[in-house]
Image (cartoon, rainbow, N blue to C red; front, top):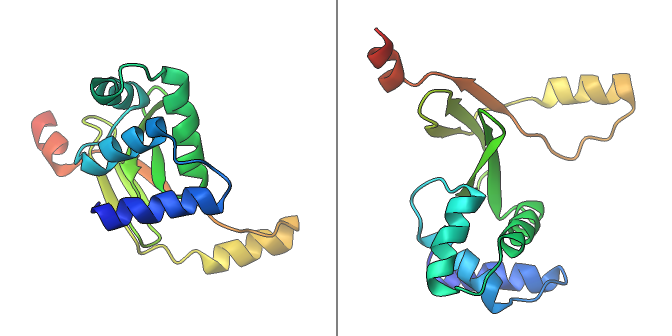
Amino acid sequence: MAMAGIRSVIAGLKRNGYKATPQRLAILRVICDSDEHLTPLVLYNKVRKERPDIGLVTVYRTLEILTKLGLVCEIHFGNHRSYLLRRPAEHHHHLICADCGAVVYFTDCDLSELEERLSRKTGFTIDSHLLEFSGHCRSCQKKAK
């Protein structure tokens, strides 16, 4: 994410009543500069290189805010471990390899009929949805043979 992208995230934080603290900015920089999936602990260790005074609780709280605002994705993998990703601009979902943790985005998820049926049946007003499939990527399937 370029500097303009970080500025837009900062503006989004402020619009929603959150301050752009030095700790939050350091967390954002690490997320934006990373091409890998980050667990909260890996993120914490990377941010500590820039801000040795940061606490793990601050990282978790900031991730909670960024997830709530739709700026990062939280992906559940295996033993309740979460991987955080920069959120692509378009609505998307995930295919997750149960062996290596590879994540593939997909956008083709026309669930409108299911949402309407569930809404009618339950009385819920559905605002959003999250869809994750887990399985085995091609590479891991080849290794298993």
